[in-house]
Image (cartoon, rainbow, N blue to C red; front, side):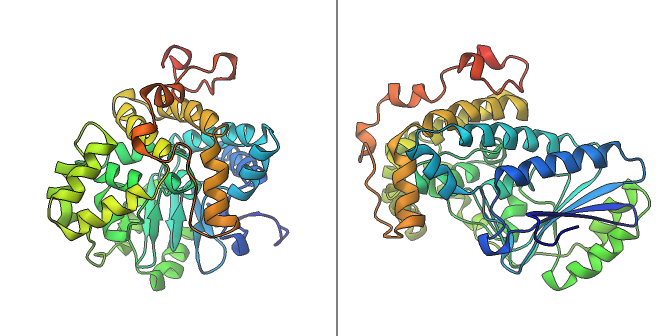
Length: 357
């Protein structure tokens, strides 16, 4: 094992550990990492001596901050296609994690965003701590939640997932548990003991029981107390009406949510609203990933992704110039274009991928 490799693999007892190892980049995923994870899961799935996989991130800041969006922006500016190839393999990895036949324990400590959610929240045992901050912040960079995120958010109680999808707000451990993004809360100080105990397990059943034994009660979250206005406001038919309801309902937190949403890409907001609602009726994760690949492929060609990454990551002026700049200028046709079938370029995970649109 080369400790400079972007993904570290080692086995303790009967548990295969996968460690994302780009701590300076907050373990942001690149194509090499996605391929390595896929190969590692294939090997672990076929190895009878391995009873479980544990995913964690190197460094002290978090599991994974998402995909390498600097590289995606550079690819888009150059008119390339390597990002589409990356997403193709990344989304296939997300599906593989969800269907992995052995316990897949994701340690969601610290920052877990975007692609980091995709490699963790589809796992069978998802651990959060008091340091966890979990988000799908794509609308802020002119993109749309992907990596199966529209399915995860669409399955959250009421309209909590839509609130998180449009605002991009991060959630703490308790709210991640409430939204179905995590299974157990374990204080960060207990993680070494938990991991050591997992390494001593000899059956898949023991892995699940051990994780449950270390679970505790998370510090109180915020979302449960906001369910009334969230469920009412985000049930509106359009983003414009959602913002109007938020702004006018008389709750300071709702008004802040409206302000937050209006700073995001208008196109990304409208596509996100449609994508999450469509995901609720698509059935399988594979069908949702097929839809997300269509959306991502189109968003990749639009100006807001390049501009959003510039404003948030490159120049950090936090002043993106969206095109169109107003929600009212994003047409139904603009939204529908993101869901159009891709023909031979489809991801093709779902049973009827080519026929949906």
